[in-house]
Image (cartoon, rainbow, N blue to C red; front, side, top):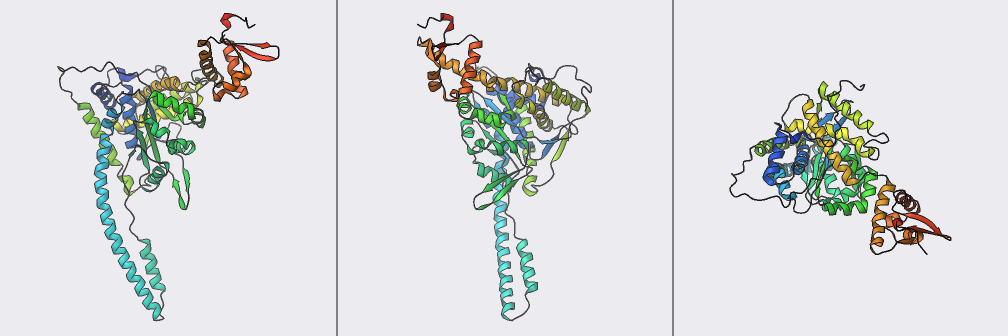
Length: 485
């Protein structure tokens, strides 16, 4: 496609423009606003949490076809950062209720199928024993057993299969158990937790390569000791992690650079809404709450979740493809190109190209989920895509504030200056550069990184380098002058 085809009447890559703040008649918008108001949580929490649950119900049965003809999964990885007391668990309890209801129903059905299967296996084994006894008698009589061997082989091929278990949402699962579920139970699942530390500390979150591949919808092979390898192809994995800022910061300090380099964070939709703590007052005279929009949304989620039952009996069925109409396709191409233009030097995404490279695709995935939640038929329309773009734009601003996509030297300089500030507070003005390297934060003890950080601080006037005979020194309070002696 050639850009511009038929440009949208305005720029699509806005800085967090959100049409949900305007009167909206979509099921998604009304449900989000009702959850936000009734549970007294900031809009960004139910907006992205609900989006994750919608995606979880859809990702197994559907795929999105991009205007470039590439086919992508609908699965999403979402990170919501809220301080303790922000009602994460309360919100999660509400939005997961439809999925858990369907899972409870399916657990009962699974028990019944398991009992039926045990009866079939008992009959199958009895018939097999009969064939073996007959085969032995034929041998003892010196008669031909070729036909009997063929009958036994045919019978063995008809051993009743073990029934599959229905489950869409996991809170705390090992990588081995989740991989096994995706390979042998259902080819779709999501990790959903209100305690992000559980996910950050899990073996699953440390397996960046496999996690990235699953989020992208790629095929992976999981080797296991003394067991056949697991072949995961055409499976869908989603993530919703709700966590506190401190927990996230600890994770970033420990494994942030590694995860960012591996491309994991680039796949995230991030929301860090302002807390409503201190503003959630009770009004005893307020009318009773009505949950009309949520009841409608909950019913739709149950319907979408039940559609996944087909995966129990036909896990290799071809997913249904969703596609954009002509106007929406043109809009998506324009959005893609606006993002691409901002990756140039001086652009918004100059230092976050990993994040930018995924943004248009995430918008398409989001649009597919919203299209299904609204109960729309046929092609995805521009109205739905615009709402998805809004969600991605707003998330993009939060991504940048959380992950600080500054050059490494700038980030190191900030960290080093914080360390220097502790010395300034104690009245220390001069430091030997060798002492700084020995005692500064461990990540900065690499000579090249330390020198680059010092250069950044010197250019900004926070530090002045000088030589005392043959010793390299730092004046960390240059505004006081250079009276070292």
